[in-house]
Image (cartoon, rainbow, N blue to C red; front, side):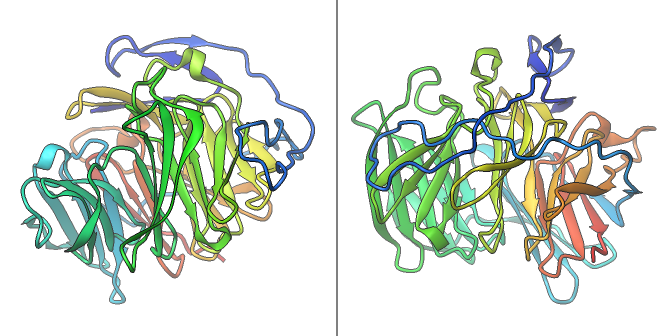
Length: 412
């Protein structure tokens, strides 16, 4: 597995599966237009909900302090499969990795100093029949959507609690409190997008709609799954797909769909099927929303109207070849601190940048782990796949393809 750092202004055509990729650079372009506005409440079509909007230019941030990991440890390589990080009151950290094609899941528990407490290969979730692959994991690792011989199942605290659907195809997003999970898929009996919202506690399908939004055209049946965010506070499902350059908002109560063109379309230069939007994240309090576009970096959004507040074009992405799944993908990471004061993004050096959400400026760069088997910064070629703050916001865990790095953030 190899990753190469790409800035958003460099469009990449990978010809050799992630190693020795040829690059074609394009000239960066500024995007300016009118402010974004929400579509009328009775809109039930995918007409334009906003135009490109920038109310604050990308500032010249200059250098910021760098901080090395407090500790690092090796973990088993796991490709681009689902993973979660959970924290215990005693300071221990548990990393749970679901491996591709039912090879079993791995769980590592480290004490506060980074020493391994346990490292077993776990059995499948209790009650499941046959091989199970994880399609979605909530931020705390309590809830899993799993594909097994018994259909698409929901697991809570490692116990199977019921069937969600016949198939797990599509993209998933849990609400921050785990109360709902949304699925966006390509309808089995049509070429249109299907949105479902499940009540996790009651294991019920609460909202469902086949949208007048085509799918299965340029990327057949969402070969790369849509990005999905569940905003339970506003009763909305926010999603993007590799086939479209916009983000889409499905309002459960109004039964409407509105599109918002947030990022410059990158599909024409996308050779990996990952599309224009590479990351999307809503803060725990629902007050902040951020996205990362392949062509124009980080966008800060107002989560009620989806107006673009600011852009940071230099937030990079990575090109990853996953040997397990035999595909090349582009990726970037986002994570909010628990109170929404800080946003973690991918760093150009392979680590993590911490940004102040109010000022929208970098305040510190967390450098990547150093592999003792190499005389170099390991993350200079490979970046984090998952980033998560501890509940008190004083630690951050960055999970790399075969390393975990923990930082003592000490943020104010």
